[in-house]
Image (cartoon, rainbow, N blue to C red; front, side, top):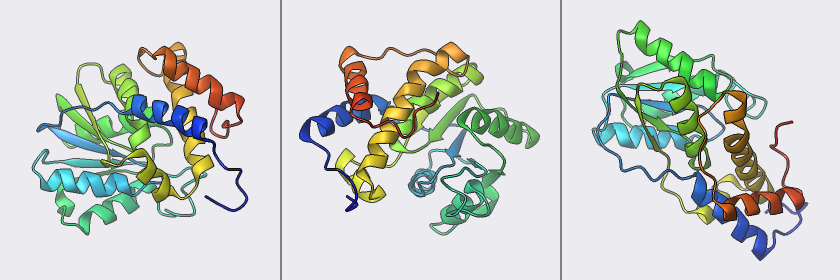
Length: 221
């Protein structure tokens, strides 16, 4: 925790874990036609995608993402470009990776990756989305809306909540991100961005509690 941060209470940690657990899709992984690594600030996405490629789950990997305000400094040449380089290091052959360097949001990650695959003559029926752990449910809902004829599976680094918080190094930011993604899961279906998903009452209560406590840094208006 940064020195300038207010300590997070035990109850707030409990509420955050409820939301963290809800965001996990817990899909059983199996071979698919292609994987798509969703760009973000988290290089663990590329690490996990490389591990799953080496395990033989898919022959082709797309990395997608341009830049956002939170990634421009870290990935000046774009998220997808840096993810690709990070994956090649652990042994993914360059020819197995397709690059989509322009997407600025999750919807564009899906639609532009689909276009890149089509341009390469690929029309998959099964797709594995590799994302940040707390982004699984939102990316699944987005892909099911925009690519309904494809079976979608989700994966991320197999980290426990506490380990993920330590890896980011900013407790307040992580809770802000969990709350922000849950807001999008709830609201995006009404905007036509994603399919609707059931949100359990205890998860909704956790969302209400944490927003009341000021974990609002990643909310949309």
